[in-house]
Image (cartoon, rainbow, N blue to C red; front, top):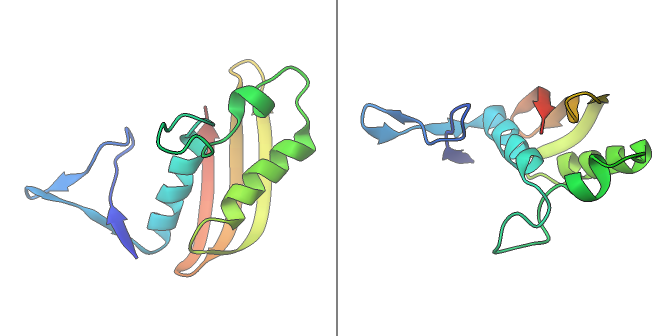
Length: 118
């Protein structure tokens, strides 16, 4: 598998006047990051896609078990992910953000993910 490489601002990466490609575990990590940053019903072509941040995650008195299930489901159902080895999700209440760390086995090696999400 290979995809077009995106930079930290999710813009296309161009090197030598050509689009850069991303391969192996970095590709799976990029796909996961895109999925985690998409809000539920954000994409008009398929409103069933996205994380229900406003509906279930960033609400008063969220259910941590349900939130874990949402994120684990996204990870496991991503093409290229074979197994979730480690998982930790922490809430940052002042910023209304989440810190997500996980280690997953993929078809191209081990993925280490450690990001703060919207």
